[in-house]
Length: 76
Image 1 (tube, rainbow, N blue to C red):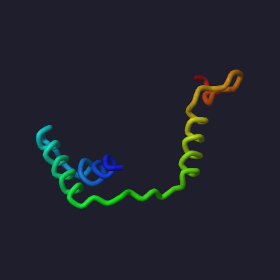
Image 2: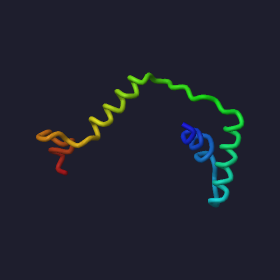
Image 3: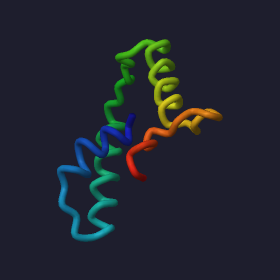
Image 4: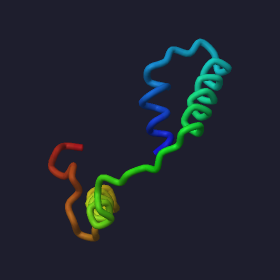
């Protein structure tokens, strides 16, 4: 979650002309975040998260034996 906050609040909004400038901004963000930390709140239940993972795995997993691939019949 901290990486998502860092990405959304700092990296996407910043313009960095050097690695040193990026590192300095990341360090500054982490220092400010750690000065007043707050717990993360889950917005979904564990069952919702596990169901989402199951759907992802079903869709992106290897095709079952004898099952048609998503690109079948498309000329690929």
